[in-house]
Length: 141
Image (cartoon, rainbow, N blue to C red; front, side, top):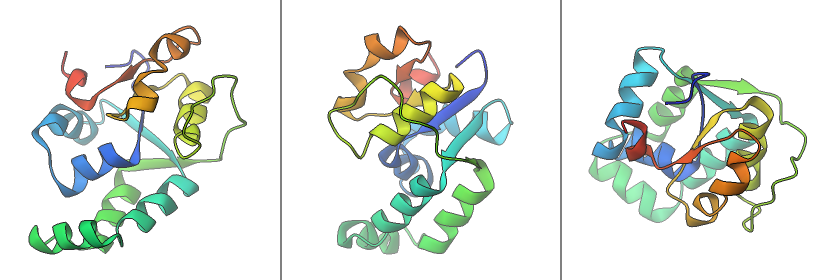
């Protein structure tokens, strides 16, 4: 867990946490529920989640799991603290869709949780600016 208690969670990890309730996110869910972590996000991150929730595969999974997209967005709103979009940081991600997560984590010195290979490859460069990148499973470690 980050010493500051701040965390940025990428969209796929959010889906694992809120929709799929993946066991790898159990410690993250517990930490958020106990206010041991403060989840930082921006409005564009919420908008990306809303876009992803209407992808046919996600709709099918939501229906199978009986989880309404509105409930998922409500959980995001309840758990995440929306902040202004930060300025772009000096660490660049090869996938522009991931850059907002990097920028926000760097701006606040937050732990960045992701399973995305592009983000995980940035570990050393982000560590140099005080940001840890971990898989949600590694939160318990």
